[in-house]
Amino acid sequence: MVVAYVMVKVNTGEADRLKAAMSDLDGVEEVHVVAGDVDFVVKVNVDSPGAVKEVAATGIQGISGVENTQTYIAMD
Image (cartoon, rainbow, N blue to C red; front, top):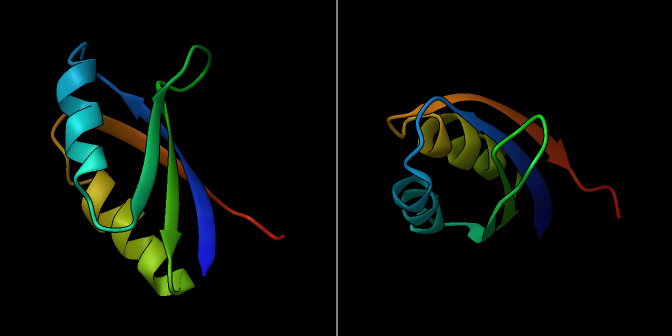
């Protein structure tokens, strides 16, 4: 399994809608609204690094209101 954390910056105040949309994506294990430089931290748990790309680049970035993402793959 590959665990990754996706930092998500949004350009809308629709936190509930965005959280629900991200939570519905296959491979997304947790979604947290956070304070700081980003608006959400999303924990992804999938079978391969390529699947991380699908969740982050296709899934999360495809949601209306998402402005930017940064993805970090866990090394342990």
